[in-house]
Image (cartoon, rainbow over all chains, first blue to last red; front, top):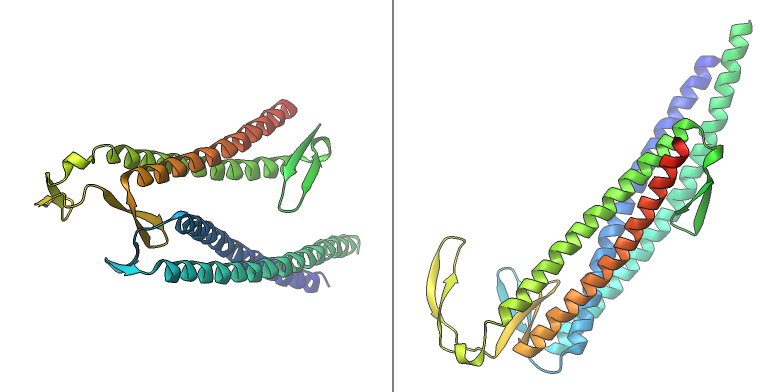
Length: 124
Length: 145
């Protein structure tokens, strides 16, 4: 009986660790995305402040002249995309959060069960 | 005795008197790593601030009279070729995500001024958070002794 509970406990612990790893991964990705969003937003602000003058886009090692309107549209498109990605990541984080909580609860329950079983074995 | 900890959503209040020793250690470790992140960010911001400030100052050296002046253009870190300043009125600035814009010298100076102000503002915010962490640490130390 004790072995059975121990096996379950180990299994649950592995699942929990896996969950934590995934959570950390998504969290890192989210951080990267929000940094990109900030950068894009500051570029957008800067482009909006421009009255005249040329806009260039760095493609590889060369600067390519771009129309102001096109540049603004591109930045806007990217901001929309990143915002959508951020939202997707937030949802994933929320589900992983609840998943982690259930694993944690299961772990506490199994741990208690394990201790009880062990105590019972000692008495027997 | 309690510590206010700002976690993702809302504030979470922790009563230090109800924590066992391992939990206190865990709390301290968590605070340690969070403080490390704040310190790293502050350093990064400081570097950015210096970079923008340097760029702004180097603009002072380009005046209308420097048009046609000979300059050494770096091709690599250790090789230069001779060139002439063709246009002393305009510079091209990297505004992030691969976009470069052409600006007049005063506009460019204005841009760097704005950037420095923005970075300084962010640093002030972080310094406030930094102080908060120091306060939490002090209370932890007092509580532990």
